[in-house]
Every structure is written in structure tokens, then in C-alpha cells.
Amino acid sequence: MSSATTTTIVGNLTRDPEIRYTREGQATTTLGVAANRRWQNRETNEWEEATSFFDVVAWRDLAENVALSLTKGMRVIVTGRLEQRSWETEDGDKRFKVEIVADEVGPALRFATVDVHRVARPATVTDAGSLAEDGVGA
Image 1 (cartoon, rainbow, N blue to C red):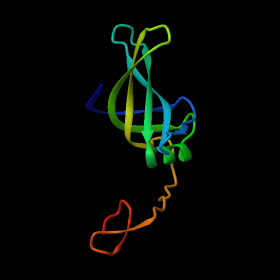
Image 2: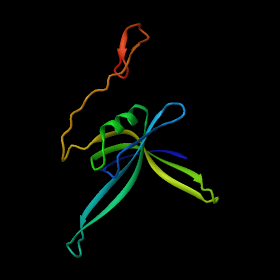
Image 3: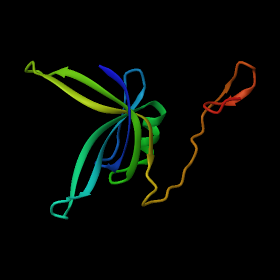
Image 4: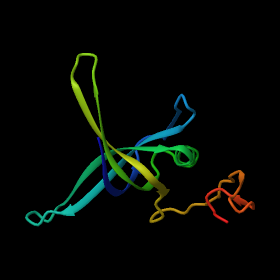
């Protein structure tokens, strides 16, 4: 089941991104993000904190760039859509999982700096017959 719900989370990577390739050669990277929420309890005036954990999946070029650029502990911003998938265990039990399928993943710059390097893409011929770099347009 798929939904068009877009979400953005900010948090820290709980593990190094893991890249794999499908049989068709498509790159896919999975990562875990822990998002902390902190608030002051109005009754006790004490600070309280809760952590939510999210599984994120990235595909194709984004998957490769994430795997090459990010490591456990980094603070990241993830934007994507929520997707639910289901499967059956060997015992016949139904399982469900909601993941964020990433459209964009980047380092959060609130507490860090980063050097950005554009990935070179092979040149292609456009409809007009001129050369253009993929993703840039002529």
C-alpha cells in the first residue's frame, strides 16, 4: 500500500547507511534516523525527552550519494513519502512496516558544516541535438 503523505524529519543516523543493489542493478540504501523531541513539563517544570525511530529507504543516485556521504551519528534532514509494506513470516503471521521513501536527504547544518561536491553525470544528447548534463537541462 502506498500513500502520498509527504513528511520531513530531522535527526541523527543510528547506523551507517547500508547500500545494496537489486537484480536489475538499481541502488537502494537503508538508514535509520532517531528524532529527539524535548519539552518542559508544565506541572513539574522538568525537561522531558522522547525519541522516535524511523527507517528510511533511498533509491538510485540518491542511494549512492547517501551511502558515500553520510555516517552513523550525523544529523540529517530527510524529506519523503510514507509507505507501508506488508509481508508474511514463515509462521504465517502478517507483518506491516511504515518507512520513509526519501526524495531528499542532506546533512543538517545547525551544528556542523559540510563541503558539497557535485557528482559528474554523463553528457547526453537533448532533443535539440545539443549536449547537456543530465539533470541540468539545456
